[in-house]
Image 1 (tube, helix red, strand yellow):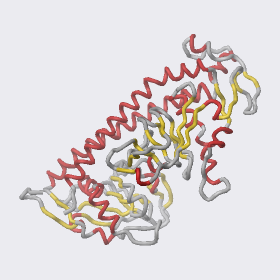
Image 2 (cartoon, helix red, strand yellow; image 1 turned 60 degrees about the vertical axis):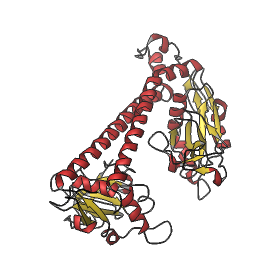
Image 3 (cartoon, helix red, strand yellow; image 1 turned 90 degrees about the vertical axis):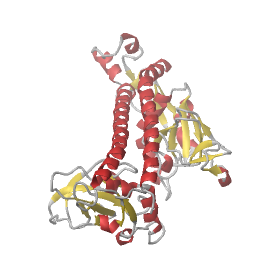
Image 4 (cartoon, one colour; image 1 turned 135 degrees about the vertical axis):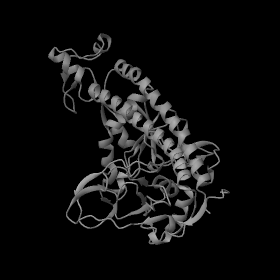
Length: 411
């Protein structure tokens, strides 16, 4: 990098790979599974307490976990361990490689960002071995990776800058999750549990403004889905919603130069709420509008996202919007129906799928149009905050990724 006091070392000289960690067989310990590590996210999202059987990667705080198996390695599953007590040892998937800093040589968080860098990941991917679909990178093959290593204070300064960006990204993600939980709770209260109707039926206050409470009936009637609020309808999804099934354009229209529209082919393009731009299409066949709900219709089936710009969808995705144009009612309706959508995952075929006919026949309870409008009005500020926060996440992620490429290029 040009600094006189920087050194170029092999990874095996700067870190310990799969260091020895003591954990007694039969003891109860924290366990981190592969699904507990989120792609391109530093924090471990979840863990369980379970009996250690003697198998699995063992690690402590300040270690880095690197997924070594396809497709987790390619997708960027890399986590920094900070969920443990002092001197506590945990364990996880056998498909993790554990990297631990060497004292006075490497800073723990700096090591994490070296391993997180695109250059390192490409180095690891090129050294994967095994049969197609079950390829792994051998731990020993990583030891000769060359890294630029500044003095410890400079490592900490670099890691702090990158860590601050990741902290802000994580804060925004948590805020979005909280806002979405509020919206889902309101949807469930109004349109699944029918709380305002039950309150009126029992003569209790609903807690809603009078003009909104007046839109709910005060009794139930029978339907093919059981008791529903009087005057509401049970309809196939295709009666109330416009459904656009994706169609894949010719492969020679795909590009990475931003020509045409963002192109989403399936679940692999989905993010936390909004899809991730991977490729573009210059000759789109099927188009969705900003705010349309996106549903994964080919294995794995049933994941939900929302289009945040005009986009092209391939055959693994469907776009859905209520005929009133309500984006929020559409999104939370599909989120509520997700348990039914996932049933198509393995119905009679090796690879599950949802057809337009399946959508059309899926029954759903539809309230009055005025209530849908009120829900949309109530949700608009929340959904706008989520969108603004998402845009900030995108910008911060771009800055962080640029820094990762520039700071940790392959030497």
